[in-house]
Amino acid sequence: MAADAPPRRSRGNLSILAAISFLRGAHNSMYGVIWQPYVLSLGASMSALGLLNSLGGMGGIVTTLVQPLGGWLADRLGRKPLLVASSLAMLGAYALFAVAGLLRFWTLLMIGVVFLGAAALARPAITSMTAESTRAERAGSAFSLTMVAFMLPGIVLPTLGGWLADRLGHISIFPIALALEGVSLFLIWRYVRETRAPSGQGVPWREAARALVRSVVPPKGLAGFFCAMAVDALVWGIGWGILYGMASEALKFSVEQLGIMSSVMSLAWAIVQMPIGRYIDRRGSRTMMIFSELLGIPLMLIWLTQTRFEIFAASQALFALTAATWVPAVNTYLTRRVSEADRAEAFGRLSAFRGLVSFPAPAIGSQLYVWGGMRAPLVANLVGIFVVIAILVLFVREPKADS
Image (cartoon, rainbow, N blue to C red; front, side, top):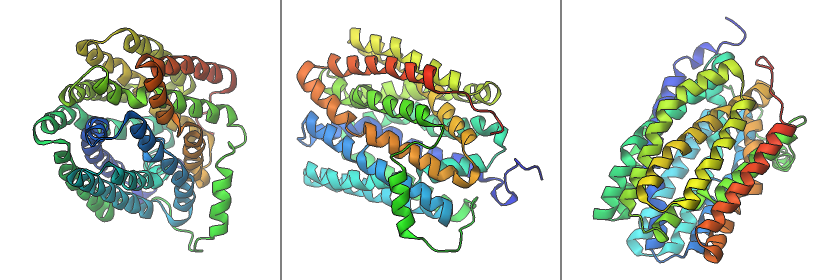
């Protein structure tokens, strides 16, 4: 067997990982649309919404701190146990969100977002497992496949979720999300095959603490890349990160309209993702990251100057292209720059470094919104894009495909 071929035991993993991504994309696409209006509907302010997202949102502090630990553990215990733990945490989060709605007690959401943030424990493991379930030269296509699977449900379900939320209440989404994640947990437990055997030496927790400390320092030769990722997460979290909440409050878009926006994004993302992945396999990832960031400039200008729903909905196609060119390029770049033995920890360190810089972004964006309306956080996002482009051009170099 060729040195860069996936182990025999992991063959077929990619299709199962794609199925899990599909199921998670289904509940995430509905949850993502209703979350910010849901928080506001329970009596929380925009500042409180920013606090919740900074705590356990996509780049929240809990989300940030668990990932270097998760990556370190995945390199020692194997990938699969982390996937199971993550799924259980996600189920707990959705259950708490539903109870908060039933009790009309928004502060209970704080416990739920901690669970949701803890679910990120498995992100380095699942990224590493995806890379280990295919040949090295097809990493970009593998990451794109799982991303397409994640985005496909978003073509229909956000609009359906918004329709249900407007008619049956936001809380109606959570039983559906619980059922979908329950199926994901079954697939992980029954069908996912381990790609990294446990070390068999137990877990030296002092070493785990050192791994957390290491996460605040970029690995040798990757300082520019890590800084670009951190600034990108910060500036996009300030603007785009609270877009649905701002559109709901300032522009009076309904949840169903937000769902249509998300569906447009998912459709465009699914169409372009695989060709982009193949391009990255052939041509490299640094140029694609720069191109992706450049696309953010016209996108921000549209959001800054327009208020019509139809224009916002159409602009989601451009956002989809921005995201579809960014995610696989970042994952492929890091995959090619680190050894397989340290891969999960490297992804965890990237997530931690990025998150430690960016976790205040939603709170900052919310305060800018309170101070200057919708334009203020979007202007901050636009200015930050130029900073990220400068870092990528000056301090990031393309890795060799076989490195």
